[in-house]
Image (tube, rainbow, N blue to C red; front, side, top):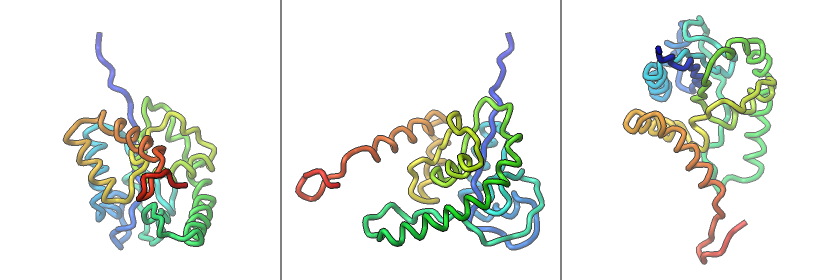
Length: 193
């Protein structure tokens, strides 16, 4: 009996670092080390690839695009030093971006059908909100960067996946979720709020 390989789709998030000439999406985003690492993983998985762009929605690697400066406004780091006003401002800009991009993602949602696995290689917080706003069920999606604290953390995570195997990605997401659920302790050992 012949073994059938699962059909995998990887959705890579667009990046802040972009080449500034009109070109294919792959070439525009290839300036970013994180984007290049994500592409390496997709080749290892033998997966189809889409890009979740903050301007164009879901696009293929060979889509011809104009350079742009829009980005997802991610939290710099989950820091206690960040004021509530700063967080509110970032959340407000994120919601505006998500509302603008959700229809473009929804229009291309047919591209997500027919896959055994859909792996999201983009910051989980914004990508989940975009798909939910576009009314796309994310319950079966794998968000490999859940809990990551920035592009360096995401790049290092992908390098570890290369070294330790693909199961590491699932374990990493579960470890991060457990860390976020642990109660924080102050310097006196008491649980803080």
